[in-house]
Image (cartoon, rainbow, N blue to C red; front, top):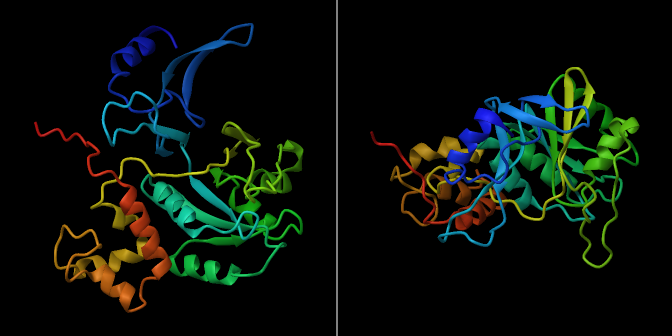
Length: 295
C-alpha cells in the first residue's frame, strides 16, 4: 500500500477488527512494477463478503473481543461442500456455514459429496435441506455424479466452495475443470478427518464471466457479528413462526409462549435444526460490543 490509501488505513487500523485489508475477490486499483511486485492504491467497496470470527488471538483486550476474518468478497453464490462419510456429515457445521452466508447476503447451496462411498442417511439430509428451501446436490468426483449440474450452475457467476477439511472441495473442482489440477489430500487414518492441502483461498478464472474460489478446509466456524436476537432470522424455517412469540425480544430458548419452540414440539421445525440454533446461540458472546451511533 502507498499514498493516500496507506495513510487512511493507518488512521483506521486501531478501530478495525479485521485481519486483512484486502481479500480474495476484491476489486482494487494497483500499480505493477517490472519485477512483479506492486502497490495497492485503492480497494473498491464490496458488494458482500463471506467471513467468520478469527480464532482468538493473544492480546485481545476484553472477553468477547474477536477479529473478523474475511474469506472471500464479491460473491454471487456459496457452495457448502460436505461429505456423507470420511469425514462424517456434520449438520451443525453445515448450519453454521448457512448462517455465515445468509447473514452476509450470499445465496447458499449444499453439496453432499462422496456419495460413491455410502448411501446411508443421504436422503435424510437431502430432504431436510430441500424442504427448508436450499438446493442440494449429490456428487462424487469418482463416479462424476452431479458434476455436470454443478458446473452448469457455476457459469457466469463468482462462486466459492467452502467446507471443512477433507470433504473433497478441490477434487470436485478438478472433476469440473481438470486443467486446473488442484492439489488434493488424503483423510487421516488416525483422526478420520481431512488434512489441509489448500492453504490459502485462491480465485480461479474459468473464463471471462466465471470465477470459482477454492478455500482452505476449516475446523471451526463462528459467524461474525451476530446478536442473539437476530440469529433466528438466518434460520429460514423459523420465520413463519416468529409472529407467534409472546415477547418481541424472544430468543427462542426458555421464554413462555415461544412460537418457535411450539413449532419444534409439533414437528414443524426439525429437532436437528433447532439443536444447531441453540448451539450457535450459546457461542454468541453476551458482551460483544456493537457500537450504535445515536447522534
